[in-house]
Length: 183
Image (cartoon, rainbow, N blue to C red; front, top):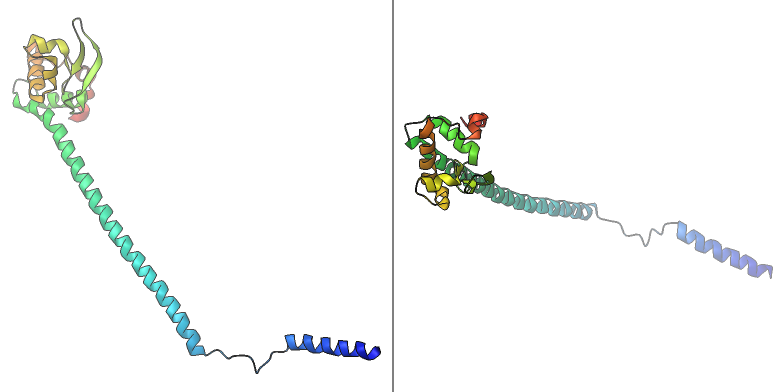
């Protein structure tokens, strides 16, 4: 029996030592050139991916810059169009056109479709258009209220209102000084 134990211990010792002692005959040596080539290929792939990403980002940047430029041009045109209506005040020489322009911009921000339904008058409600002409003035000067949305009509009626007293006092944006922000 003791021989069986000794044989088992010897067998166990050989298995353990075989696992811990490197087997030089079975170990395959790596070629340093092959290892270096694989590292180089991996790095080249990373570089290629970064270049692709860089190209995509450049294209996206160009597209965004083009879109931004188009939006800026549209905004500039809109601002010019908005101010164009109020510039009609310069067609009249009987008032200070700079003040009239300031009143126009203060009243409507240059929007010919502006309406203030909170202005209540004896016979109608609302002030309309560029210079926020009160509804009753339309009929007084032979127009319909909807005609006040026409920039040329609105400025003409406003000029007639001004001419009645040679004053901008009919516009609260004048009497409160708000118009001066647009001079």
